[in-house]
Amino acid sequence: MAYCGISANLILYLTKKLHQGTVTASNNVTNWIGTIWLTPILGAYVADAYLGRYWTFVIACAIYLSGMCLLTLAVSVPGFRPPPCHAANVSDCPKATTLELAVFYTALYILAVGTGGTKPNISTIGADQFDDFDPKEKIQKLSFFNWWMFSIFFGILFGNTVLVYIQDNVGWALGYGIPTAGLALSIAIFLFGTPFYRHKKPAGSPFTKMARVIVATVKKWRVPVPTHPKELYELDAEEYTKKGKFKIESTTTLRYLNKAAVQTGSTSMWMLCSVTEVEETKQMLKMLPILMTTFLPNVIVAQSNTLFIKQGTTLDRGMGKHFKLPPASLGAFVTVTMLLTVVLYDRVFVKNISKWTKNPRGITLLQRLGLGFVLHIIIMIVASLTERHRLNVAKEHGLDQTGGQLPLTIFILLPQFILTGVADAMTEVARLEFFYDQAPESMKSLGTSFSMTSVAGGNFLSSFILSAVSRITREGGHKGWIQNNLNTSRLDLYFAFLAVVGFLNFLFFLVVTKFFHYKAEISDSMEVLKEELEGSRKDAYQVELADNKR
Image 1: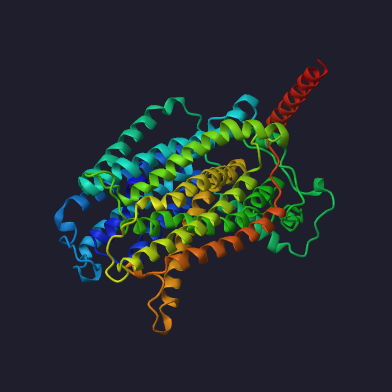
Image 2: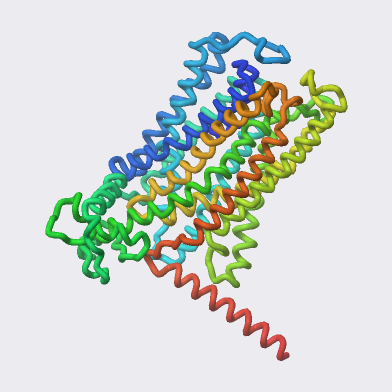
């Protein structure tokens, strides 16, 4: 709720209150969101290496809350923002002073530091409460991330409706004050549950472990890899049991890294690594190509926080005589669609399709991710066609130069927002669960942070693409595709361009997934679940056969 209460309407605050242009404001939003989702790598490192997930989360919450308090102060005190301006072109308005920008952006980036410790650890703490060796808890864990995102969507829904309306119609001070109080309450609730949690101790720096494997491999680049895995260096199973860790068998994936476990007489930690350490490094490295394919879909998602909202400001937002829908509230349709899709997916789709695929998840995580990628391409096609229609209406009514409001309902944007909700229900859950599930047990926080890095990369890439397209299309004396006046812009071409790039990214995704191998389970609980599914399918077949005989 706190994050969405800021991000959903941030572009309008930057343009209307701080008087920034469309490209500048859009890039500031995506750069901030990118940083918000990039800092979790640091938070994951601190959690896995030093403080543990619980204490990293608690300290980060204190930082997050201080940032929210400062941000509320920045939008409340008149001296921290420029005087009001109602000029049609924001370039004619007085710019924010250095002090005003410094206070506002300091608050925003304190939030980025706080989220670095909260985002990669809270969902991981939740997943840690389930025992992988208990089939009953394992099946609950398979649904956990669906219901985790379901609960998050409720906070987003409140931010996209109530908070956005308050910010637009009552005041920014109250609109930011409510999520600040809500955050304080949620932290108190979390702390109250402390005695009931399963706590996992930090297992050492994941980056140091991976660096040791890579350095040892490079140093022994001439050493041949034994044909039999038993010849590689490994600790006794009892050593792992004492430390509460899991032993991993050697695999042929990224076989070159097995050189790090070849015994050459040296016992230096930078010359010899155990098979388990090598396999942990492999599990993290082989996820990197998948991570790369997730950047572009997040560029498309970034449009719903920036250009989609700016589109809404040019349309008729009236609902009855006295109510105007805030443009950012269209994000509520994304959230509602996500809520419905997650429930239907978990309770209907998985329940039925798993009987045939024998997969407790229904379909694989990468298949679910790919389905979301296809939907993102469709979103950009729909957005391009809708924008083309909007521009035609603007031209017909002579509003292309004045930048006035079009006699066209804001609900023409609804299809692209609804499709975004369906796509996010596929990609958001699958991406989070994939990077958590495929990370080794001692690097779960780092694995979860990969999901956040995906969003960060997408937002930074969005800033780069938007700036590059804006600059390139202005060359040769042209007006350019993206201007402050959207009625003379060519967002339809920009959205079509993203659809094409998204399609090329999907082809790359298909190639990458073809060579990806899922890691082995640490327990046999998944096999137990598969056997149960197979048994239920046989039972259903026998009942059907008996009915046919009767």
